[in-house]
Length: 171
Image 1 (tube, helix red, strand yellow):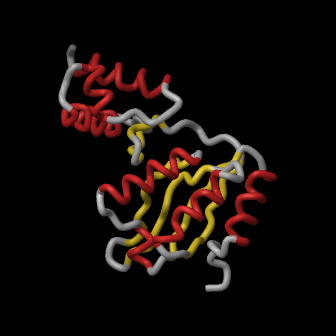
Image 2 (cartoon, rainbow, N blue to C red; image 1 turned 90 degrees about the vertical axis):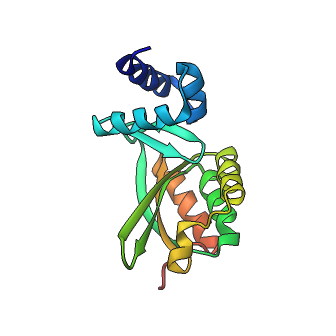
Image 3 (cartoon, rainbow, N blue to C red; image 1 turned 90 degrees about the horizontal axis):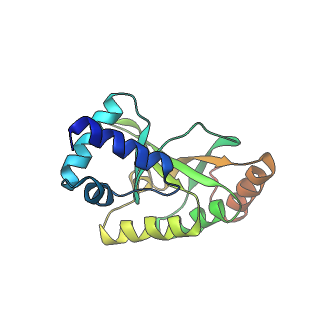
């Protein structure tokens, strides 16, 4: 398979998938190494494709639907699961996490955590990789872009974050 055809196939796979697709799965589909896929995705992004990397694999970022809001949160690393469950259990998606680093400025990482299984996969990845969450760089303070189908869902998410003590409202 030629490189152009392979990249077209990667995009087609991402367009039809409802869940993230790992580089390993794409490599098997295309009969190449995982590293070739990583390079192909970099070239697709450079060409304007909205491909995001998540802890569970690649997704094609679609036009946002519904309601989006950025919220300021604060919690310890141990409370990360409670915060993410508060979001997904109330109909929201944690689209990303944003921290303000004193040297690098704003650092944004895509999450695309939409369901409990996404939360569990994200937490497992943090544990298995012995990684620290970005919020550890800022004493737990961070932002999330939250997406919800309706304003009522957004109101529930914000109230769940508030009642869980996760909102950073009175800094």
